[in-house]
Image (tube, rainbow, N blue to C red; front, side):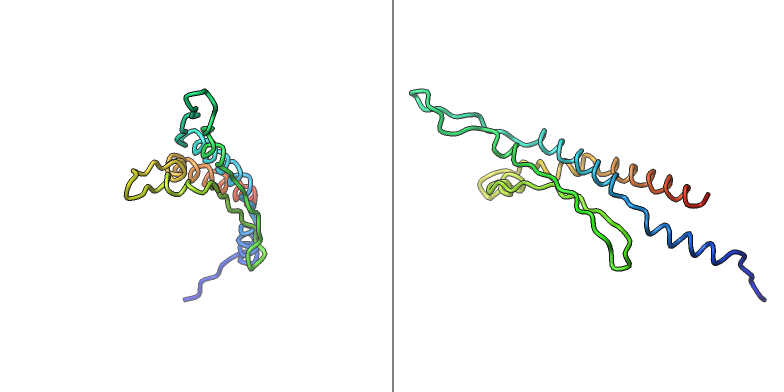
Length: 137
């Protein structure tokens, strides 16, 4: 039995083109959403004052510490990829996020990602469908 595949060369070329789809716009938007939600979820300590009214602790350092970066790279075969990172460099952020044996965890970064996980997956799926449809035409 012989199976003949018509236009195999064109099909292979299309699959090669799929690996060049740049997902940067979706990753950029998703990273921004997660950062905004993390900022909103971050616990804030109040501004503390001494009895004479002088401030000795300004609240909001942890909340303002939420940062985001989107890294745009090329893979080994030259195909583009993007990585979104939301992080908080404040030294005590890890203790607030995961807790300690003396303090209950108050997750704000992981909770933000979980809130948007399905939405990000759906957005990425829609974007890839749209881009692959363009390639097929």
